Image (cartoon, rainbow, N blue to C red; front, top):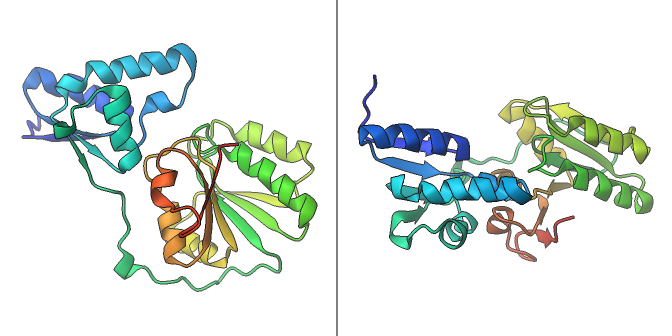
Length: 238
């Protein structure tokens, strides 16, 4: 009905549907995976998702990667020719970033994670690390912002918190507006990004713009955002 001249498809599922539909109409598609779906599952699911991506290479006018990791995956794993990939790094308007007032104050140091309670964002690692830190530095508090939306691992995370007897130290909050989240980042001592894989996450960029310590996993996307030992710290997954 719209009959566009070009379609920009976002995410793996959207990318598959858009390319299948558009190819029948002769409409070129630009595709941005925001982290390929095959990076998540193991075994036959991973192979199946990768198979679909490979089959749709010829139906993709251009792959627009959000970072160097995604660019590399598109070439090595999926088989995209380099001339059909462009990289436009996810970014924030650094000139507009202002250090938010620390309207939220805590008597104790706060370590913050922002992300869905999902397999990709790996909140379980955050809970395990929180337990290790608590055993050495019991005054440190922890918070996860991201409950509610696509909360596939919510029950698992809460069970782990109870198992470690960390109920009074780890707080889980739902998504909030950007202004409140900025104030929370400003009030935090450190920001953690324990993802199993990512596109190129905005959180470490926003946190570093506020001068916050950032620690992330050495995985796709996160390692594009953090220069280990210079702009933050990278650790091995789990």
